[in-house]
Image (cartoon, rainbow over all chains, first blue to last red; front, side):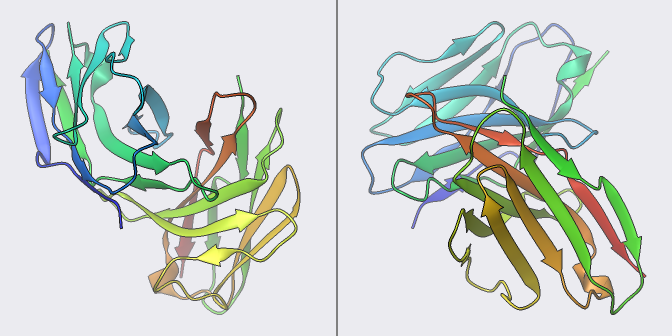
Length: 115
Length: 117
């Protein structure tokens, strides 16, 4: 069974700083997707970034980038120039490419951006 | 972009009643939808996978008779919490996969806060 582990329950950083959220996962699959989702106080799940396992290049979306280490099964999220609006719960997630395509979430990291 | 609509956003009901939550994919066909439950300050727990035209697949520990799922069309899945009790109070979220082309993405509804009195 696949598992996703986020070892940082809560983090706080000053506005404009860079912060890295950790995520490790376990799977026997070779083809899969990895995601980072943001859940602000509104509780709407927002896709931050997505990585296909077959791509070696790390995904980047503006201030958000990942460090994908497939062999180590590590998928960390780096937020550069952090903003107050980045305050939210962040979930790392895993999805296989089999028929069901169900997504498994980590327990989340609560990120506070301090003014 | 693809949008998933979930209704109602909030419902309060008496113990013993049933509550239906709808999840619609607005601009794409979703053969598969997923239902999650989220407790306060916790992660999303997958309850079941809803497949259009067939029975839902429930995760271990989820009561099939308590949480009825119907996926009668390619754009609509419903979750009915039957004979609700206070312990069923939670935040329920649906999601749907847009599998057009190679852009597999998962879109989430805005969630339903269920409070059972």
